[in-house]
Length: 141
Image (cartoon, rainbow, N blue to C red; front, side, top):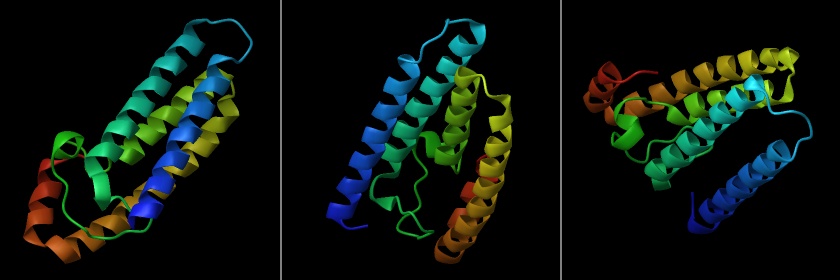
């Protein structure tokens, strides 16, 4: 991803998170356990996404590409933290909105993320070989 696209995409992500947080925190209604727990999940998801995206740096790509094998920080424990924290964030939104039917959306997202993770794994294994296989052996998802 070139510099201009990288910064534009990062800015769009930051603005989207700000808009989501503003919407959810100004949502009318009582703050009870479900909304509180959903907010905690949402914040964990946002912080985890931001940290993973930062640690991935220039290796981030919308399509599966092999720039470098990132194995530090969150990536030393989880191969796909953006997917994991994204699912946590969505679960938090579902709890905040009190819309259990949206769990179907979350399930669909998780299935798509698993498929995408397998596709990315093939690209990384082809590019980095034994180093990626060793990394995969030591990490979760």
